[in-house]
Length: 144
Image (cartoon, rainbow, N blue to C red; front, side, top):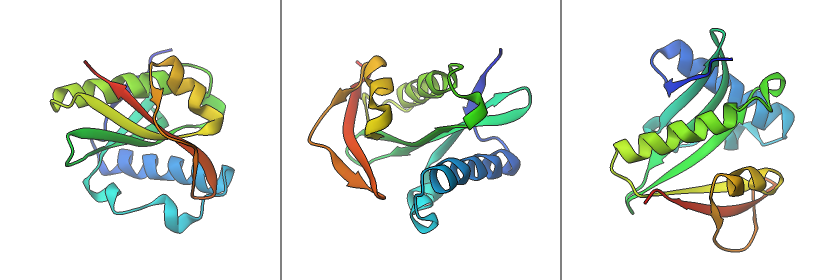
């Protein structure tokens, strides 16, 4: 299976990414729709993962003033999970951060998937907290 991950190149890809995010975060996880989209979306780099001409994964990267990149809204279509798409999205996020000259990535991981990020080398920084009604923990990754 070929996974093509790249920044959204067309309005159609961006729309597909937002549709996928709504399906995962709002429909599946019960995040209030008004919280799923926020001010960061306008300035973020939006990544899509494409398999067989379909958007099956998405993530966004926000360049922050403190020199970090915040990765968020990482999601994979339900029927495409467990096939390496999340790892491909995160590898592309790391590449994008390096291209932008950033050395550290931060994210808020849902506790149910924090093991995925630990396996990628992320470290927990701080106690668990609730965001959008879901337990999370802050994690960081040093790009070296």
